[in-house]
Amino acid sequence: MEDWRVDSFFTATHISYLQKQYWQTRYSISFPRLRPAEGSVAPNFHLSDKHLLQLICAYRLWNENLKISISTRENESFRDHIIPIGVTTMSAASKTNPGGYVVDPQALEQFEVSDERDMETIKIKSGKWDMTR
Image (cartoon, rainbow, N blue to C red; front, side, top):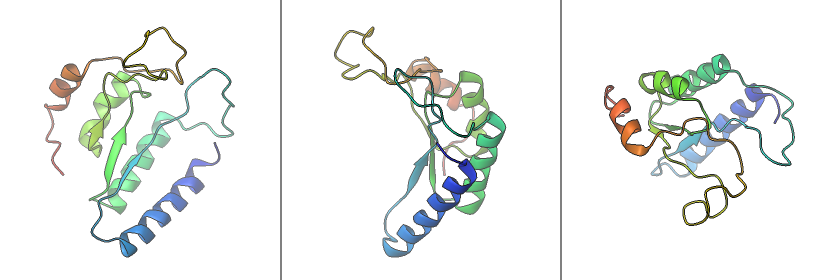
């Protein structure tokens, strides 16, 4: 909602603190950009694809062991191209409506899903790159 550079700096600072205090724990981060949703507030800053890529690269350079996740909020092309750059996990076949895995899929969604591919398609696509970290 605010300047992504400031938010990211303080998130990294917090992760550093946690790693020093709880050094036997693995840490992960996700970058869920805001998407249109019913009743949502427009963010004060827009995070472009270019800036999100810079952010992911910065986190990867800063901490090679940090798990980095990308959600289905991102479009198919962006997700396909970000895999070899530093992402360790991706969501697939996500439902965003409350109870979405057991109720009518037409129910109110919390946000738009941009990449609607199924899990098998994502696995095949990501299998083209070595995802071990």
